[in-house]
Image 1: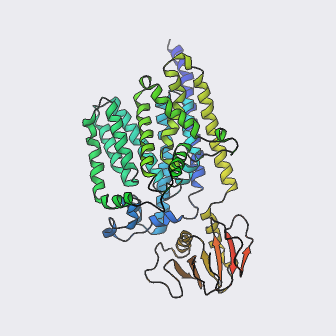
Image 2: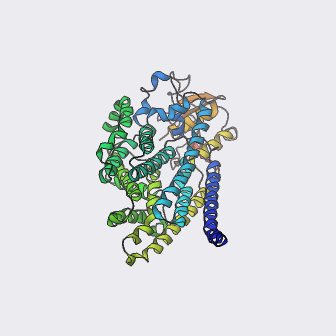
Amino acid sequence: MFLIATHAQHPYRRILVAEAISLLLILVWGAWIRLENLARGPTSDEISFLKWRGLSWIYKDSLNRLHPPFFRMSVTAWNTPEQALMLGRFGAFLAGMLAIVLVWILARRSSNSRIAALLAAAALAALPPHILFSALFRPYAALGLLMATHLLALSLWVAAPERKTLAVAVAATALLIPQVHYIGAPWLALTGLGVLGFSPLGFRRLWVYIPSALALLPLLDPITKNLNVTTGSALPNSHILRSFEHLLGMGLRGPPLKPFLGEMWPISIAAVLAIPLFWRHIQAQLKVIWIGCIAMGLSVLWVAPKHHLAPSTQLLAAPMLIVLVASLPWVLTARSRRFLLLGPLALVAIMGSVGMMLHHRLDYQANHSMSRDRIALFLDQYGSFIPKNHAVRFVRASDTDIARFKLTGSVRRENAIPTGCPNVRCFKFNGHFWLAKTNSPWPHASVWVSGIRRLPTPLPPGCTLIATGSEYPELAICDAGVTHP
């Protein structure tokens, strides 16, 4: 009898081992493609996170209007800028890897399918925006991890309200999320109200969000200023639609003639719409994740009319959406056997989406060099491009910040304008001026550098385009007195 029982357990044990090995392979591959990005050149956004002016500036920093201070200052306060950059990137890397594991856990519990859970982990591991922000000193990888952790703790608390440790976990993650990114504040409010409203916990358990609200009180002034100022000119209504395309599409775009075969947003919308149709027949955890996803959509809807939402929006709901998509086969068959055929079809769609993510990531990285990589390569070999007595004029001011950091190690502009410079966006290094474009005639011969945009066509008289190849930025050598358009 013992031998029979042991033999019967072997297939199940082999399945568990195969599942563990598959997850490990996904993590190893995800770590490998992220680690190779850690040594890439800095971005101007990262450089803005490296500025530290002392404790007295924690609540005075002008960047507080866009990003809460404690996330960036917890790294920059006790490290040199170079050390802070690598430490911040390594923290993002760890957050990204842990988020892959959490997505697997959430999908495994929500879909009742090992295959769907592994596909969900592979999807996040292969998602291009997640790869990018898991190797940058930016808040989005940490934000995704904390939101996934909060939803897991919240769903477990709904199932076992007597466990105080789960309430502490919910309160702790709620405390940290708005300190990483401001969009976490409305997301928490909407998620908390939605989950506690439908669950047996009731609104009396909203006390878990009080520490998070109190911690934001010192930042009310920059938050209020942020709400009252529109970034750039008045934003068109189409910007809201573009923001939702970023949110639901997760940065995956297909061929223009075959959009439905190469984009993620149709299956994302299908997953979001399917949950309410089968609401009474699905488990509480999936309801919690759905509420979190809807809460992020409403948060983006609230922010989009005021502010340009960058491509980072592609990552805000990605872990939640991937879990919903992975659970779609189970959702479709939860109510009736009549939908049994839809389950395998949804699973095939998920597998196709993961394959498309892999292709998109590999194809993009093979055929596109990033602006910061081209600028970094130029700075490593600028001596062969810049003639003597020529200045360097970058088309984008942010490229000047990258050059200052890479060449001098400094993350700040000088308070006083250096001798010979037109403004503070200028510095002198190795006998050359390095500056952002100036609309007034430049009295010295110069080299124009464009890392992301093309130089004006045709070039003004006195400028000659240099053929540098696709790995370098576009360069033009200009005579003295040429005005940048």
